Image (tube, rainbow, N blue to C red):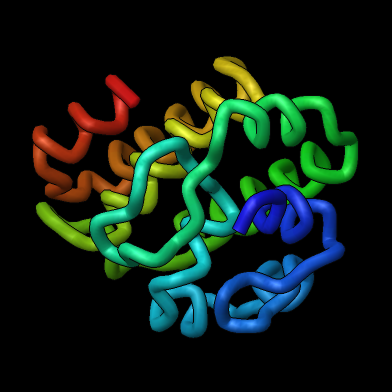
Amino acid sequence: MSGAIRAFLEGEGPDASGRTLFDVLAMDNAALERNHDFIQWLFPLREPSRAVPDAPVLTDAEVEAIRESGMAQCALAAATDRLHAFYRDTHDWLMPNDHNHLRITRIIRSLRLLVGDEQADAFLAAILSRVEATRAPVSARSRGYWTTA
């Protein structure tokens, strides 16, 4: 699967389900909530996913290639905007524990790895602001994972 993540993020290849980057970014909120195998492609990491064991894993070379790719950086910015809108506009994740809390941790970690601290910290701040504004009972454990991601 070498280069598959970069190709996906550059809009030149599909994910494991045959979707393009543009297909995933165009999903409505219900589809984002219902599907569990896209987040590993939008926000890849160097370690395997426990939720989707066959999801791709980044190599050091892929990390560098994605960091240097203007198209991949644009895709990560668009993916960040889309997921920010999802978390702004939905409410089901605003509970003590939810699978979206793991997604949020992944997004922050991936942004830190592939884009930079500023973007990761901005996404974290937006999530924490939403939690605070709604007075949601998100667990301290989840918030701790986010702040240390």
